[in-house]
Image (cartoon, one colour):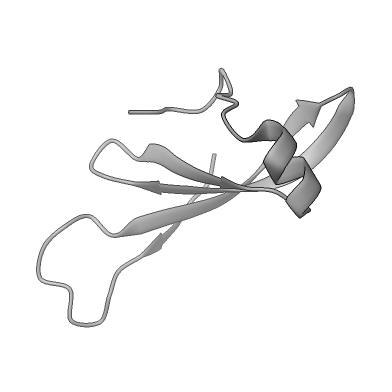
Length: 69
């Protein structure tokens, strides 16, 4: 997965935040999602979905191909 690494202008510590566009199969459909990660090992912290309904439906879902804490 290719990430965009974002650092704050005045950031003096920490690894910043990483964002990536990713596709997951949800209910038989390929759905584009945005992954927000952080930390030295690029841990997945937040998954953004294309709709509020899908986000509510997938709320606690953990995907096998993402690296969580």
